[in-house]
Figure 1 (cartoon, helix red, strand yellow):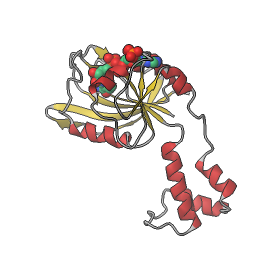
Figure 2 (tube, rainbow, N blue to C red):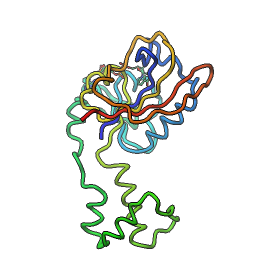
Figure 3 (cartoon, rainbow, N blue to C red):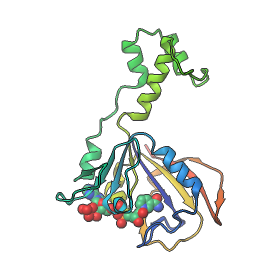
Figure 4 (spheres, rainbow, N blue to C red):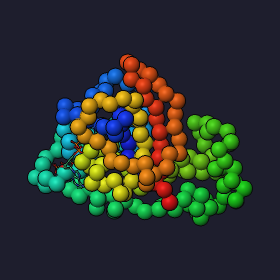
Length: 213
Ligand SMILES: NC(=O)c1ccc[n+]([C@@H]2O[C@H](COP(=O)([O-])OP(=O)(O)OC[C@H]3O[C@@H](n4cnc5c(N)ncnc54)[C@H](OP(=O)(O)O)[C@@H]3O)[C@@H](O)[C@H]2O)c1
């Protein structure tokens, strides 16, 4: 799954020539962003990379650049062709249920119980096969073949046809940006939209969009 994540204003602006105009003003968005980026692989453009002092913790940080002689800061890995990188991601790994059924010896009732959202929360120790199955299922869902494309504008534009899902923070207003997120409404459909939040006089909400079939 290739997910793009960005905060955009009413004009789809993401930054001006000095950076992100709302930087440091909407802490809920920073929390949301950090929470999403806790798992899977991150791909960023060289422009965004230049603004970072350290990599995102606990994940692989890849930097798209055509410049093969560039030596990156510690914790960042270069990607010389972002499209090839995204194409080479593992495609459609077996579903957690398929793996559980194939090699765990669980009955289909166990699997149904293990994967039911209404099942009790896991205790720290998972003794029973179906509890271990849940642990495996959740770790599989979080890691396999997933990448967060975190921009900026040039990287978004050069890989946009490969996006499966868009995680967008929609800010009300025009922030005078000079760099923009691609047009997306005709190719994607909105699957969720959060309640408006106002922080430091900026009103925004979170949306998720999926590519239309
Ligand atoms: N509001 C938001 O959510 C948001 C999100 C992300 C970024 N931003 C902001 O956007 C700004 C950066 O955006 P930007 O458009 O200037 O730069 P960028 O997209 O971060 O980086 C552009 C560079 O990435 C490399 N690149 C792009 N596509 C590539 C591909 N397909 N394969 C290999 N390399 C590729 C090239 O690097 P080389 O020139 O080295 O070859 C290109 O010059 C920053 O101010 C950042 O803070 C905002």
